[in-house]
Amino acid sequence: MQRSRLAAWMVFAGVLLLLVSSGLIASVVSDWEQANGAHGVQQLTVNESAARVSPVGSAGRAGLSLKDAELLTKKWAPLPIAYTAREQTRAVYGAAKLNTDVFGVNGVYTDFNEMKLKAGASFGRNSVEEHSRVAIVSDTVAQQLFRANLVVGKTIDLFGVNFTVIGVFDDEGSLLRQMSDDGSPNVLIPVTTLFDVQPNAVIETIQMAAKSNAVDRGESQVREALRGIGHNPSQFNIVNHELAYTRMTQWRFIQLFVCGMIAIYLLVRLMARQLSVMQTVLRSRLTRDNWTDVLIHERKALLLITLAILGMAACIMALWIGIRFHLYIPLEWVPEQIIDVSFYMEKLRGLWQQEAVQMGYVPSPQELLTDAANHLTDRLFIAGMLLGLPLFMLGARLWALERVPVYAQLQRVFIYVPVAAVIIFAIAQWAGLSYQIEPLDYAVVGALCTVAMIHFNPSEGVEFSYAQTHS
Image 1: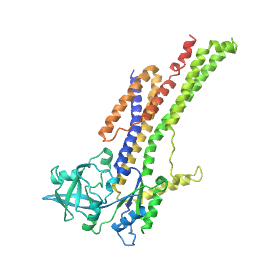
Image 2: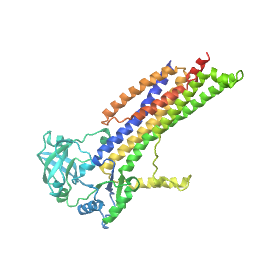
Image 3: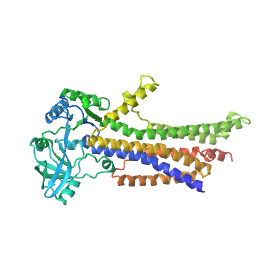
């Protein structure tokens, strides 16, 4: 009894982890895509590399001037560009003072970054062109600096200059955004105004709407544009959001593919088992009767076995259609020879060297958000593949060893799936994510569960129908 309960808990934990993995991967990717604003994943982020030599040869930060950003905008036209300059200062309101990260942004910033306004409004291109001294503050800054909710219209001091607050945005967000909070803006002002009060500022981060074929050529297109305005592309770090999206979503497809292929393999073995049963039945009858008599007397058994095989073949086709996908492998990771150990050793060495070069690098908020999404999806995939799948398979096998009836196993699994769905929904709500689990996830996991239960219990599988025909 205790082993049976252990098996039940293992099966439930396995089903839960498999659905949590695929469902929350989709939820995390959806939240990350939404955080990228109206352009979603169809953009590239370009960030200055700190502690490098400036393009003109003098020591300093390798950012862009406001004039350079305007030239790059024209170079990239007709697609839009959002650019950001970041400075730290104290925000002062009366006797209250607060250290803040002030982001100077242009008029299309909100097209590349989701901003949930709680009060007031955002500023547009007119405010940038007119060098308006207006500011949008986070809800945290409003509470800590003003100790009030109604702050629109109030004046704060930034860089020794008065700015009028015209809006308040929500900075809490989901678990994903909380994980990437370091470097997020506290205050937004027009980028032209920031350069008025801080002439030594530089454009640190550029967000560019992606052109066609951005997955393969996005980085080279950006480098070409930077060279076109006289800047060395090596002084900037480029993040291709479409490529990041492809990599993150691929984890879910890989998991479904593995689960589906296991189910297909077990179905093939079940089909072979049924053919073996049919062969045994025919051989036993052919020793006494001719083919005509055998087909007449065994027509019910043969019909059942044919229907079973056709049903399993249909399941295999449906599973294959659902789980097949195009695996994306970056071209730079494809060696000229099929087996080339030195090629991969060089690649790994290059990654280690890249990490050493990035020491001291200050990533942009968009990079932090992308890194957080990458880490979450990686861990969710590991939880499903290295924990969920083995737990389920071991639990199903233990159920079979304990001789738990197949119908009882299937009844429990059909209860576990909706219970797991409710738990996943609660987890998503707690993490501030949208519930994104797809019907395909349920279908593949359900097929795997059903086929595994039948496969591990051959004495109680579909063979029972043939035994009944000869009883």
